[in-house]
Length: 167
Image: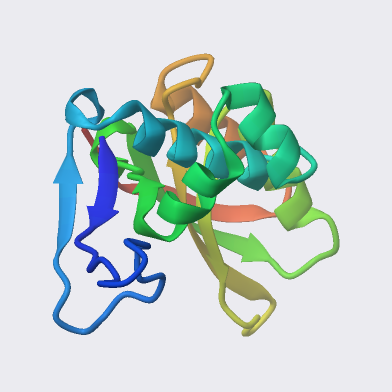
């Protein structure tokens, strides 16, 4: 899927207006119906974002599009990140306020190949801090119960629970 915003063409040059106007509409469309130039422009932007190309010239060369095509469409197209396609677990933890506890918890998630999507740690109070996090489980090495047990066994973790799992 690709996210495209409805753009107005300049009457004199036919160039896309780069700034989205207040009344413009946003669309989500299947990439299969978009012209190749739009798809390659979106792909070039991704290459630049992921630092797989050092500059615009390298990105467009890899994809075989012209510089004018890239600049014509770059502000009007972006890929759409669909959170509905990711299996996500939301955890709440109560951690002791000691050096290395949060780092150890993150190490456990990395060992189980869980992708941390969000993390929020509250200010410590009475020697503990509440941490909430969302993790992607698509590449996890085992069931979420295994991750939960490993987190609960970590030194400095006073309490851990799953608040929910999506998809």
